[in-house]
Image (cartoon, rainbow, N blue to C red):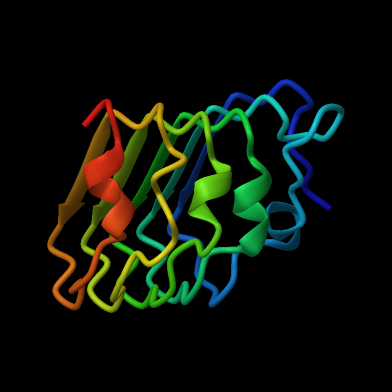
Length: 135
């Protein structure tokens, strides 16, 4: 089975045609020694059947950029977003069914940029957004 390189720093998933990401992505831990412990950029693009992001994303402790675009059926966003303490950039574009970001984002003190565009059903952001010092 496909496995990422041990020193992978950037991962872009384009046009993956499934409701879930591949098992090796869903099982990522992000802790020292794991294949994705050095991942700083994750981009998921044009995965139109994708419905939810794996909970394991919360374990990518080195992640600085999370970009999700053109995932028309993605309905749930990462519920443990607050675990991504290194995150500096969050971008959601053309995720039409995604409704809310309810995770506590106040612990994301490194976050410098949030872009949410063309997410028609997005009605609510975490109240902690106003507490972020870098935005």
